[in-house]
Length: 71
Image (tube, rainbow, N blue to C red; front, side):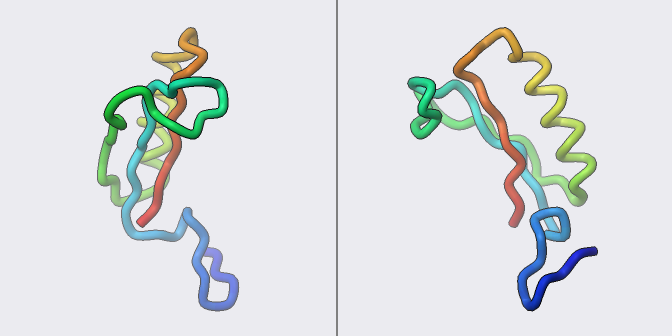
């Protein structure tokens, strides 16, 4: 685990979610509908596997993006 001062990195958090979906435009600031949420996952690697699956499945859709959120 990597800790800097009292702040832990996202990889060290306890739970992870994969969130995203189709955005309104290429500014990627606003989703066109409800966000897709997968998780929670107990470790970063499990979330990364789902992130890779979702991004691979949507690679031909230019407005679809996903990220890993920690909490």
